Length: 483
Image (cartoon, rainbow, N blue to C red; front, side, top):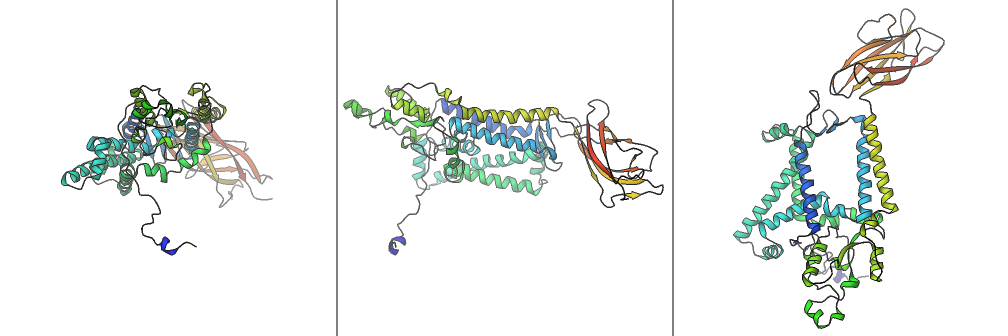
């Protein structure tokens, strides 16, 4: 048993305190790629709710809209109804398979470039540089006492954080209502409570996660670093420090005195200084590495300055690393992308996408759903005929009112009429008008002569009048008394 004095020792630390990470400014191929992706993703997020899309007078003109009140999802020319939720499920499946594909091919590149936590953290780090300066200046500011100057600067920086976080939450709710109208209602106090609550929660989470927790979200909260190992293999490209070339580390002066004793790494720590999660890539693969490759930019710049070959830190597969370590030739990195695993992922991903496009292109813009009334199942009329009642839902998915022809076939001697009207003579079809982008609920009666059959099968069909004469049908049963 452990010594109780050791267990109660106040100096014993159960975990290491967080060390603030202050990434240094760097320029290079991967840094410019991060800039481009950050600008594009933020522009898409903030601007998309304001894009207009003309769908006619009966539908909203916001390009991307999740209309919860009317249970619709609009995305430019596509309109998804509740019964078509499988399209949304298909998009989610494609997103998951796409993440598997990216991870299998280039490791955690999603984490390093396009993950929302990475994008907003990167944005907030640029705010840090704008207000406090680069790495060394920020480190000095952290250690400095809380003077009036430091307090004002901190409040100014946190104010920018809060402004970004607020507009992040505000942009989110605009996807669920008409953006210009919601902005007016929001600032005049007329928006729904849920709008203010959502903005408040998202403002707080963005402010905390992007402004203060940053790499802790990636290392401790996100499950993906723990799952990604199953998605990668020896042919997945990873950011790798070539220790066989870099070790033993030593400064330029030491290497000049004894070149054979030292590798290419000059131990400048620039790879650590630019890392947004503060890891040392030279220690090998780590859960904190998000594969942003900024360490490659930093190392290549240093290697160029000291006149040594670039690529000491590089995108390379485990197989190529072993081959290069053994002095063998390796092929171009892009060839590792064209292997069975990535091709299978891509094939499945593309197949789902093509199937969804085919289904979208061939779907009808009307739908019929009919339910037989069960109480009572049938009614016997004064002339001896048997009457069944049905509730029909006719869905018009176009942004214009449509004339629909409702008819029945396969039930000899039957008569069809709408509830609330008198029974016509030998009518097997009727016309109804369904408003634009809506569902019409019809109470329908069908009467047929009594026969020896207890149940007959027939078909009810709807057909749109005029252009785009689409149709839909449903097989139903007509019930009679038992003989």
